[in-house]
Every structure is written in structure tokens, then in C-alpha cells.
Length: 77
Length: 433
Image (cartoon, rainbow over all chains, first blue to last red; front, top):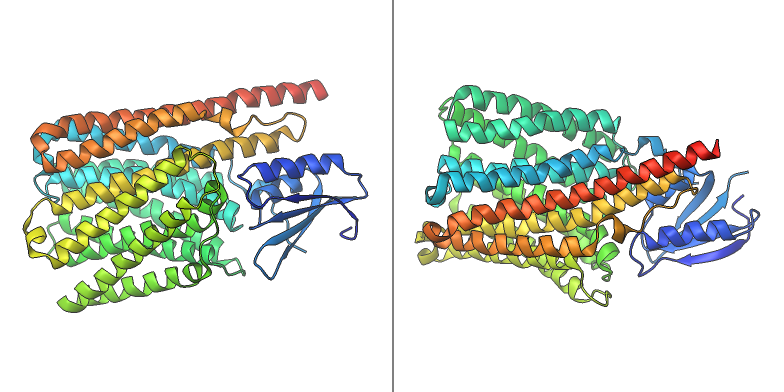
């Protein structure tokens, strides 16, 4: 579940959409199914959540004290 | 754990696209009206042709683009899902489109039947949208400046619609209602709360995201919407009560808030990390500078008797605000929203088996650049037409038709890419079976 180790980190700060989206999907392809991807963004990526949902991924989104978002994504069992 | 959004709740591409493809048609119709009515249209803001022209741009062009964008942005930006998005889009679009046409015709022909039909269609379509948007927005427990701004904007659309319907009824049936006060209420809530606040709420997200600028200052996000809404309420109260000094002061303070938003955004755009500004960056700059000039014209007319005595200042203000300001920023945003939506839907439908085309291929930069030049020429000619109507009204009408015809062509190109890629996805799906 969410305790899966982070296989790749995608830092989406300063990138124009849809680059963070594309990098995240590429990272999810590249990691081992037992790992997760950590996505860092200044806001919640609702469109990405929709596609993740459709493609069988789960996610957990957490707001940092600075107002940014850390999103862990992993494949549903 | 964060609740996952259901993709099925998100609007299909055809829901916003129908509004986006209809909006330029209204602007082209406004251009045709300029050609048909000629210099007489620009004698005063109150001529039937000027009222029809203004409402083809506001209820036609702007409303279509803004309702379409909100229907798309509510789920994407704040996670507020509108119920049955395709059915909602079908009903709203099918009523506000003929409603806007009938309203323009009612101004030109001045018949109660046309005003009545426009009131029924626009009233039904807009209240359907307002109720759906309110239910979606008020169902979210989170609180952030964008969400607050969108709530205020929907409220603004409600007041603008109500006052607009009342004005249409008063004109249609020659009712003895306070027309000037109602008009000022309609303009204040329409341009400031529905127009400027929704723009600010969306800008808080899309300017840093797409223009690669720093985030808006925290104080701006915290106070702008609340302060603007409070000032417009003061302005409306003073206007309806007939307090002249309080009206002038609160209206000035409201305009100063709008100018503040534009100045802050211009400053952010100057700090963009883009190596080379693209066309949407220019559309934003043009819109903000034009909006600031419009504010300056309005303030000058309020406080300088010489400007107030010039009969054309409201037309200059309207051209700067509507075409230079709102139309520029709308077109600029469409050039980001439409390719992104096409890409997003194809990405989702491809399910990783078929890759979505690059966003730059969905709508090539060269096409956008050419339309930007046509739009710039259109803005310049309209301003010249306000000052020298006899010389420039016809070139301005032609330019408005060309610029918006070009916009329509570009949007159709992007939707063509979507359709052709769907065929590829379907072929891949059949091969995989």
C-alpha cells in the first residue's frame, strides 16, 4: 500500500503542463510494481488523478506546510 | 486517503467544445453587425445597434467561453464535479445560444415577443448552470482562494442574470423601472464579480501553471475576492439608495481593486521563466494593459469633467474592456485549454496503449501566432473606429470577422486532430482484442 518504497521522484515545480503528467506516467512505467512514485507539485493535479483512477493506480495526496503537494502513487493490488 | 475522482463524472470533450466553437461565431456576427449598421452604431452606447453589438460580445462570445470553461475547470481545478455534465452542457448550450441571438434581435427590432423569448431562454439556461455550479462548489469542504473566487463568480453571474432579465423586461414592455440604476448594477456585477473575479480565481491557478511565473502573493489570494465582493456590495447599495458620493467612492475603490489584480498579474508575467514568451503570454499582456487603460478611462470620466463631457468615452471604455481585455484573455486561455483537453482526453482514452500527440501538434504555434496578429489588428481598428467611426468602422468590422474566423479555424483544427486520433485508438483497441 502507501508504505511501498519510493522508486522514483518526479519534481513538477517549474514545469508546464502536461510535462509533470507525462513524467509521472513514464515513472510509473519504469518502477517495480512493489514501488511507488513520489510526485512534487505546487497544486493538486486533478486531471492526473482521473487518469490514474482509470488506469488502476491509487494515490495519496498530502499538503506540505509551505502549501505544496506531495503525491504518492502506486499500482492497486 | 484522498477520495479518487471518477473519470465518468468528468465532462466529455464535446461538453466544453460546443461552447468554444460557438463563441467565435457570435463575435463574427458582431463584426457583421458593425458592417451593417456602420458609423451610426458608434454614436452612443444606447443605440439599439450598440446594445445588440455589446450583447453579441458579452452574452454571445464571453458567456459561451466562460460557461464552457467553468464547466471544464470546476472538476479539473478544484475537483467540483457537475452532475451529468453532458446533459447539462446540452441544455445550457441549447438555450443560451438562441437566447443570445434573440436578445440581440430584440435590441434591434424592439419587440416584446423577442425580449420575452430571450428572457425565457437565457433565464432557463443560466439558472440551470448556476444551480448546478453552486451545488458542485458548495459540496466541497476544502477552502482555498480559487474556490472562494469561483463561488463569488457564480453568485456574480446570478446577480448579472437577474438584473439583465429585469432590464430586458423593462425595455420589452416599457416598464417604469429605474433603468440607469439597474444598468449600473448589471454592469458592476457583470464586469467586476462575474468577469474580473472569475478571471482572478482562474488566474491564480493558470498564470503560474502555464506562464511559469511565481505564485501570486499570499495576501492577494487571501483578500482580493473578499474585498472586491464587499466593495461591489457597497457600490450596489449606494447606487440603489441614490447616495451619489458614496456611489462614486465605492465604484472608484472597486475599479482600483480590478486595477490591482491586473498590475499584480502583469508583474508576475514579467517574472515568467519562459525563455521566449509565447502567443498566450502576449494575449495576457494585451488583455491586462487594455483592462488597465479601460479602468483609467472610467476613472477619468468619473473625476474629470472634460472627459465626462466627451460622449464617446463609454464606447472607448467598452472597446478596451470587452475586445482588448476580456476577448484577448479568453482567446489566450482557449489556446491553452483546448489543446490540453484534447491531449488529456486522448491520453486517457489511449490507456497507455496509444500515446497522445504532443500538445504543440494539437494546435501548432504558427497558427496561434497568425491569429494573434489578426486579433491585434482587430483591437487597434476598433479603438480607431470609436474615435473616427466614419473612417474605421468598416475595417474594424472586417477585422473582427477575420480574427474570430481564424480563431474558429484553429479550434476546428484541434478538434480534427482529436477525431483523427480517436480512429487510431479504436484501431489499436480492435487489434488488441
